Image (cartoon, rainbow, N blue to C red):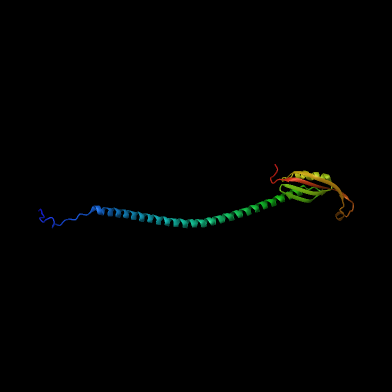
Amino acid sequence: MIEINLLPKEERKTRQRIPIKKILPVIIVAAILLLMGLTYFRNLNKINSLNSEIDNLEREKNRYVKFKKEYDSINKQLKSINQRLNVLKSLEEGKTYVAQILQQLLKSVPENLWLNEMQIQQDTLSLKGKCLYNSDITKFIENLDQQKNIEDPVINKVDERKETFQEITGNSEPVKISNFTIDATLVSQVKK
């Protein structure tokens, strides 16, 4: 069935049209505000998540800084201990080295020759002594040259004079004595 409205136009119920021209800017502004709000909250969420990550990284960094300080402290102590150990090793090597030199000197000294002074400076050995016969000095030089840690012994000076040994021998007669000085090179390795 078809309905026909016979009322005059003035009395008829009219449908009101929505004024699109007036509402459209409001809808656009609302949509833009909604997009801006969503973007703001999304960015705020990202910022909070990044701040949380930064805080976690800072805590980890502080923990690693603490471990780094401990590591550096332990390394410093280790270096100090190694330096002390190296000093002790060098002292021990020097101790045995000097003992070897003394033992080799003891083997080299002939009868009627005695040493008054010995100096070791770096790789040089200096000896001062006395003997009854000059041939003993030559024999001493030959014996030194055969030792494994002593090389190139050289006589620097020999002088003769007469001395008395009344306290030792009970005799007041002067005896001819040769005073000598010898220099030699020390080597820490065995001669080939």
